[in-house]
Amino acid sequence: MTFQDPSWHPETLAVRAGQARSQFNEHTEALYLTSSFVFDSAAQAAARFSGEEEGNVYSRFSNPTVTTFQDRLAALEGAEACVATASGMSAILSLVMGLCSSGDHIVASTALFGATQQLLGNIMTRFGVRTTFVGQTDPAAWAAAIQPETKLFFLETPSNPLTEIADIRALVEIAHARGVLVVVDNCFCTPILQRPLDLGADLVVHSATKYLDGQGRVLGGAVAGPKRLTDEVLKFLRTAGPSLSAFNAWILLKGLETLKIRMQAQSDGALALARWLEAHPRVARVYYPGLPSHPQHALALRQQQGGGAIVSFEVKGERTEAWTVVDHCRLLSITANLGDTKTTLTHPASTTHGRISPEQRAAAGIRESLLRVAVGLEAVADLQDDLARGLARI
Ligand SMILES: *Cc1c(COP(=O)(O)O)cnc(C)c1O
Image (cartoon, rainbow, N blue to C red; front, side, top):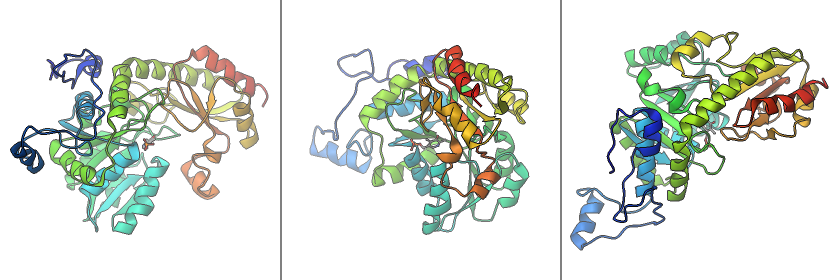
């Protein structure tokens, strides 16, 4: 390992943490595209397989490029250890499979990423792990949902697309009093804007596909926290196999190097766009934690170092008016993805939330007039011009 100091600032850790140079003394991190590793002797092979000697055996278990990514993300999250996975969903799957058994119970937010909701609400129930979904912003509902079998709280803050903020400290207090672990999906803030472990959470999960890569190239995921917990996740991962590829880990390392400047610039851009939208006569409502009009603005200021890059807003009208804005955009990409340098525009009611019933959508507060912008790195003035064209026609 090259010299490193855990007290370095995040931007320094993002560039330097976890690097281990090979015999060639390469400057940038090496990409080890190899499925397996050789041993010096039969005895060493035996010692590596039994775990008596540390070292790489097979890239489903560990790989030096993946290890560098894990160590760098652990440093950024302030975690003892980190386990990388092939995607964000395989991080969440490995976490549940590693820590829960048949009969266990989870309390989760109703405002989770769609696939996480499906995994916890449908798939895991077939294996005897039940989930109760409760409102993101109501700690009393989380407390009331705890059962003797409750193992975890699972939340994602800010939520997508309405940017509701869960009070991590308050939920940690409730959970820990009852011996329940708290898991936070930190995809939207990244450790640059929010460090859940500092607020008492036990584990952080990531879809590295989003801001950690930040340039829309690869899929990846991670679970970070104390080694005693990540080791349980690793036991499932190395057996079941949704491991991160070395190539994707190398791309993600390059992504992490620019994470701080990207997150700050995208969060600043989102705030500027949110203010402009709030003042626009054709806009009915803006959802952005950095605006004083946001119901949890004070909590967001305490818990986050910025509002994040997701801004949602309702146009005056219904689906037709929202689609008019989408269809007049030439710059913003019409796609459901987020976390890219390229700004994306989504109509949740007909895409990400299109398959749930109109009643469920209404309960979740997803109106037909709602649009979500995931702000990238373009000039805010250009984003405003693009949205203004459609807004002028409604
Ligand atoms: C995208 C996303 C996931 C899933 O990640 P993949 O890398 O697509 O598997 C999980 N949580 C949140 C909040 C996400 O946005």
